[in-house]
Every structure is written in C-alpha cells, then in structure tokens.
Image (cartoon, rainbow, N blue to C red; front, side):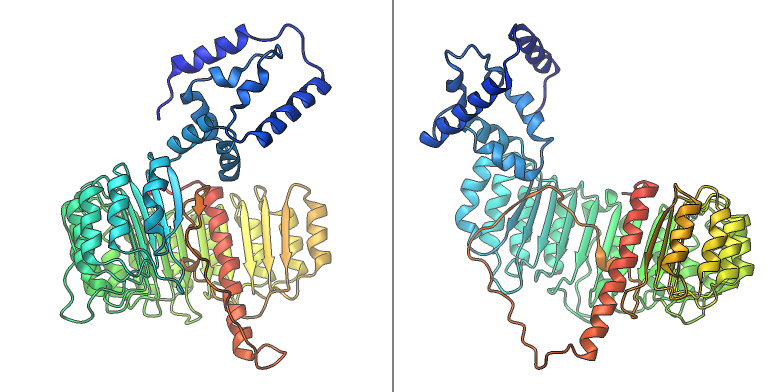
Length: 545
C-alpha cells in the first residue's frame, strides 16, 4: 500500500482546519479516554469515532487516509501494531494490509489457518516459516497454498520444515518467481528442489543453505545450478553440508557473485576454489571456516583482486605463505579475521606482509595467533586506517605489545583484548595513547584488575572500558555460529499446539566436567561473536550485502 504525498498533505491541512480553538483540560482528555475504553469494553464491534459525537472534539483519525494510517503503523513495534489492530475494524484491515513481514510457527496445523492468515496479511513480502524439532512441520500442501496467497513474496526463510519435498519446493517457486532471498536450514528436500529454485527465480540475489538433508552423498550427488538465477546471485552461504561441493556449478556460474561463505562443509575445497577464482572475478568477501583448504586455495583466492573482507577460521592447513600471496595481490583488503587455532602456522611473517601491502585495513581480528611487537609495529605504521583491533588467546601479547599499540595505532577506535598476558601496566599505557580510542574490552586477562580499569576510566573520561574477568576458561572464536538474526520486528504467530517442555534430568547435583566444558565453549563463542556484530554495526554495513 503506497503513500500519497497529496493524501498526507491533505490530512495535515484537515488537521489544521479542525484544530479546536481552546485546548482541552487534562481532566477532559482523561475523561474522554475513559469513555472510549468503556465504550469499546461494552461493545467490542463499536467504532471509537462514535464516542466523539456531540463532544465538540474533532475526529482527526477517521478523516486520516488509509495510506497515512498505514505509514504510522509501519513505524510501530510488532506489539504496538497488534494492539492497534484491536481498536476497530478499519484499523484491523489497514494494519493487515500494510504488514510486509511475517513469521509463523510452521507446524502441520498451520495448513488450516493459511487462508485466513493470508487473507488478512495479503501484502506480505518477507516470510519466515519455523518449526521446532519435536513437532511435525508443514508439508507441500501448505507451502503451495502459501505461494498462491503470497505472489509478492521476495524473501523466504525455512527452518526445520522437514516434511517439504522437492516437488513442493518446485511448485512453490513456480508461483513465487520474484524471490530474491532464500534461507533454508535443517530441511529434507534435496538437489531437485534447489535446482527448481535456481531455474524459476531469475532475480534470486542471496542464497543461504544449512544442513540440507536431502542431498545425496558421494559421486551420485546431483549437481546444483547454475540455472537462470546465476546472473543475479550476489551472496552464497553454505553451512554444514555433507556434500557441499555439489553446489560447485552454481557458484562457478554466478558471474556477479560478491560474497561467498563456506562453513564446515566436508571435502577438499582447494580445486573448486581454483575454478571459482578463475571464473568469478568480482568476489569482495570470502569466509572460510573449518574447511579443508590449504595455501593452494588461498593462492586461488588471491586472484580476486577486489577482495575486501577475508575470514580464515580454523583452517589449519593455511600458513604464512598463503596469507602472503593474498596480501600481495588483494591490496583493497579492509577486514581480516584469522582464527589460527593455536597452530602457529600464521604468525609475524604473514602479518607483516599484510602491513606492507594492505594499507586500507580497518578491522583486524587475531584469535589463537601469536603476533610479536615486530609485526604489531608494522601493522600500526602500514595500516594507518586501522580502527578496530581484537587480540584473543595470544600468548605473546603482553604489556610491551599493548604499549606498542597505544603508541603507534593512532586511528584505533575500538580495542578488544581477551585471554592475553596483559596487566594493569598495559592499561596505563592506553591512558596516554590511541587518541581516537572510544572503547576498550578486556576479558579473561587475570592480571588486569578492576582498579586498573577504574584508573583508565578516570584518566580518559570519554573512554568506555569494559572489564570482564569472570568467564569460563574455554574459548572458541567461531563467528558463524551466531549468524545474523533475520526478521527483526516480525510478528510471530503461534499456530497449533506448543511443544512439550524439555525433560532435562541430572544424575547428580553438580554439573559434569563435559557439561562445563561445553558451557564454556558456547559462552566464548557468544562473547567474541557479539564483539564482531557490534563492530560491524559500528563500522557500517558491508557494501556487499
């Protein structure tokens, strides 16, 4: 539902024309409000406008065009929109017709409610269908019916919709050809369904696939892509796929691909990365996490001369040589994240190559990497735009290295130090250095005390200092597990019965050692992932998404 400028101007003029000559007292306003409340309580089908009859109060809302009312609703939170929809029939109708984003509990019972839901919400363009693991999900019938009701759909998220088949996905894509973004996780359809998406949705720009169970493993796997969507695809994200390499034809055929993210997909990716880099020359962002990739793959990536963002997370076969090649060729690099998994295969040599060849680096995250003062000095002098720096689990980063950062990193705005042997002396160095520093996070650095953090706050009043020394010992820096949450502000309709409560039994009053280890692992992920997300919002959204 579009907004007309003339309608808005007309509503403003009408409001000005009917403005009461005398302001009403607070008591009168409260009295009128109580009348409205009581009126609706006694007659739920009543129109609140009737309350104003004979009261001498102009009814501006009833004269407001639907376009203006819809514009107001779009500025409200989901909860406030729900409340507004209960005011009267007109507001219910306008609120439904102006809602573009919807999230539904995709249990099997949803099929019964689809006609009524999408009769009210007939302008939905972004839809999320999520089912919990203990419940039966919607099937093909429900998905096809939704596709017939939502012809304008541009974004679809499927989570744990295990009853959907290749045939259902194929029929859906025939009805929703305008799809631009598809995200599916823990679904059981396979290659035929994915190929149907790529063959029918010519405008598809972003595809995210996680744990797609229906893909055949081994040599019998059906290749996926490229399809008509190859020309429009810009972002591809593959996570936890047994045979993710069957998506190779799709990736290779995506000539306008800008972002490629590969997380925990089995198989040797070196050869495929060589072909991808040879065919796709516009890559700007590459994420590789827990992948079987070596310096051969990194050397292939170095052919992407427009590369600006590179994440290497737990890829133990990648060494200084591969990083050097990337640095020497990809001189536009702005963000570099490395989780070396404490293998020491990426160290000063690779970081010095980055310092010499990549002057545009603004964000550097080093986890399980051991840089020394030598490489830190080179980075500070070579990367004059370095604004965000995180050093986590680095055994070589102590007070001397922190003093070096304070003296040399003039542009630094945000600094995160985690599980490093720094002390209050290092905090003192920050008091007089890094003139543009606005935020410091110190986590699990035992020698840094609350007194040292308080002294730093007092010395630099405008500096936000966050000290947290109470975390569990285990640390994992996987950034992908926290993925960006989609559908913010969407209304979540619960349809059908709710899943039963989790039955968690313990054989003893104390937690087991393995449970504590897992708890520490997850906590470490959230903390570092939270840092990444906040930095992303601070530095502005990527140009590629």
